[in-house]
Image 1 (cartoon, rainbow, N blue to C red):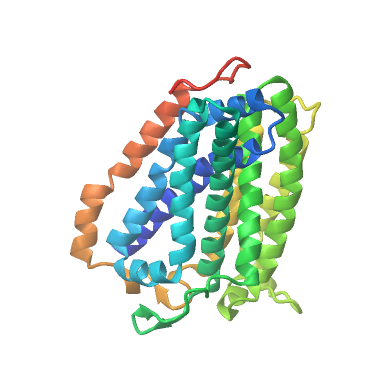
Image 2: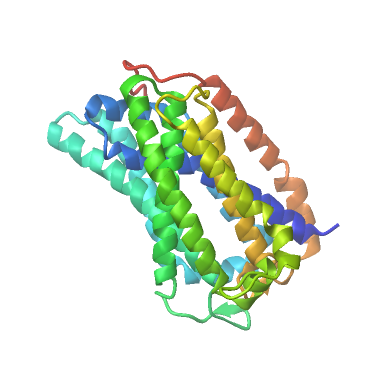
Length: 344
């Protein structure tokens, strides 16, 4: 039994669940900064109120799994990404505080401060995650078994592009979530934001994909595509991924139109599918490295006896958390009404 591969899949699932679930509530937080009035902003926050803190459980599972199952990868990547990781954690904490305090503010100035904190916390957290993603894809400087690069190696034009792309992607997820959860003028506004964000996501996915091909020859070889030629024997094998992504973009564009007859749940499902295709494309580009392009999952994994013990002890947590997540979302299924507000 290939325990490192099993753990890599488990961690990949946890990270993807975090991106989809916390991604939409970070997107709602960003959109709250553009709400037309306080009543609409309250409806936006009410749509994520029952689930937003539970969504971050997946981040703990992914990070904890990396530390336990791939200690060498954790030891290399953490120093490389210290600044964006700390920025993300600080923003998530500040955002959580703002979520509670904005409802309890007694004065307009104080409420405006906490509303701003909720918006900026969401934006900085999303941007930081984009920086981490870009820095991970472009790789880090490793000598023997340690990170030997600089503290700002993560900050490059490529990571600025991935940072902006993640923000736009989260706005798309948040908009589609609001289509699912709201009605009336709020939903109409969410459809407009979804279509704007979808254009940005389509452009961003294309730009990031092309830029990724230039990062390392092994990525180019995997996809069989260069700026000058295409190796169809390789490209045809992976071509369904971008083709599915293109189809999802067209389908989502039609399902976010003002006069669409599509059910309100479909845009969010399509947006999640679009994220999944991007995630699959990333996997195709960098597998089997979890420290691109220096260390593979087998080189960074803990010993098999440790991984086996972790699998028996921690493995059941994934389906348990997944079942709890499904239960919570089913429990709070339904539209946010205009009169709904904070109940904490």
